[in-house]
Image (cartoon, rainbow, N blue to C red):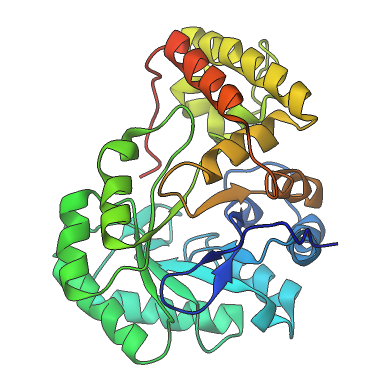
Length: 326
């Protein structure tokens, strides 16, 4: 049953309300996650509605052939109006399965149209530019997305992985409803610039990596060895001294989780969705049990004392080494 205490949040001026926990649909694309299959992916998507998670985040590039978007369409069927769907354009895979960033207007229009076909809808609720293209002026990409919104193909427009200068330039051409940067307990750089910009301009912040690719879920033991093909193995936070410092920090989170009768992941996501300026946390999942767990971060709040202990533990941990997704 949906918890009536959940605090849904407005998506800009669209009149739509979104859950503060969103389902991130990159894992079900099966490109960097292991043991992904359509049965589990569809069950994950179908679990969202009863959990109160109405916000689905995907992208044209989530899968070499749009696997994520196609699975969303299959899972929600004729219940489209029960969901708020965000997708992204501006990144695709070439024939060698190499990532290509392309923000040229003609490419953005083509990707938007293909995403609508895959999603079996005539309009997405939020369309992001997935990343700035160094070969295309931000203003040109902004103009193309503005035209797509004016044509009724997107209810609102957002950008992902932008700095403040790029945000200003884009926003001058096309009103930004949402930004999507990485953000979590160990990766807080946007508190200095992007989040204040969002608060000043009334822009939603939908943050990805709230669990730092599973690290902050607290389930990986100190001696964990990655399986071949696990994309997380390339990130420094999973190795050496960084890994041990992160495990020490997780010990404090485990103690707080026990006090709350919650899991570590629920504590981490709850902390995230109550940070000033954060609208929603995008929580990736490839099994229904995973989104069931992170949905449990909604409907309650850490105490001030618990939040202060988290800050103290972070100070003891020291500055982490992180890596950007783009």
